[in-house]
Length: 306
Image (cartoon, rainbow, N blue to C red):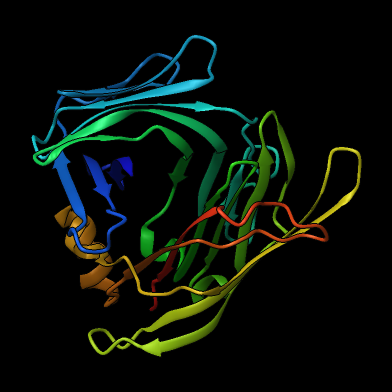
């Protein structure tokens, strides 16, 4: 994972961070995590490319690929290119969810846009050597126009990549102050085409166990359902499900955010959010089998409770 987080908190202070995370498939090597503040950051005139000292995320001329380069941390020097092999998608006219009683004057908003199926080239240089990241990937652009603890109380994320199909899902549940409303955005793609994309999907935790560290219900099994229509009006229904197995990681979110945001979320509201991450091999099913048994499923399931 390579990620830029740009925060402008209530117009008071702007912070910017570059994060890198590497999961090792042997389940023995500790995850590699790097998180570094950025200086001299900004955007190009079209607001489509980002730059900072020793870091750049650049969209190419025909808007089909992003190069991601970072030398902000010697433990993980990033040089990868993410090229979309299927169209991008967003739900609604501009991919934005609005909060409040008046859509014309919302109290807050969130926007999500996806490149669900991408070809990845390049490497991350670590102290143990180069890691070749050639393969398939996902690119997400998100804008959160409100304080994080007002936006959502729970999240579920899924990224599925196989030789033939890709599926992505992002679901959040608003806090009780916004009616505990479930918002789900997802889609299924293959090379050159979006099979379906929309908001009629669902994520379900089928089993959970109590996490003694924080008292949150850690998911142990889950089911993810996609429902939509193709461009010519045919129904598409697909499912991923099963045990999440041994988790890859548990992330204390407040330990990895700037101090001002930590104060707003943890100190004011009393929230202590955690993210549970798993990775396993599963198959994506519809009325006919969509993928081969060697399909690789990546699931990020987070429980952020208030």
